[in-house]
Image 1: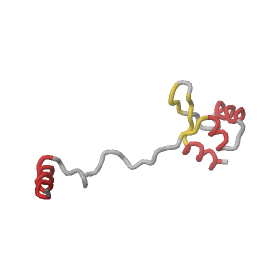
Image 2: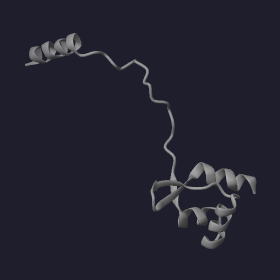
Image 3: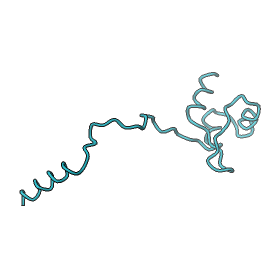
Image 4: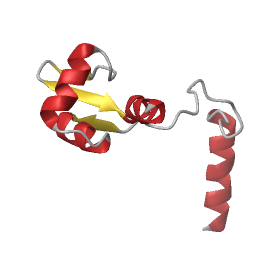
Amino acid sequence: MLGAFVVFQQFLKAFMPDTTNQPTDAPDVAPTKLYPVTEASARVNLGLTRFRALVKAGRIPGPIRITPKRPVWRESDLAAFIAKL
C-alpha cells in the first residue's frame, strides 16, 4: 500500500506546479473593522445626534456605504479622529 502512495506523490510532483515558495500578488493587509453608526458614535464617545452633526460638518470622516442604506465607518478613520482630539 505504501508503494501506491509513493507513486501518487511522484505523479503530483510531475503534473502539479509547486506553489509553496512562490510570492503571492496579494498584499499583506489586515482586514479593517467596520462600525455601523451606533457603534461608531459610541467608539468616539458621542451621542448619535452629535456624531451625525459632526460628520455632516466634516469634522469626523464620512462613512463608506456597504449598501445605499448601510453606512459604516472604518476603525482606522475613527482612531485617527480620536488621536486628533
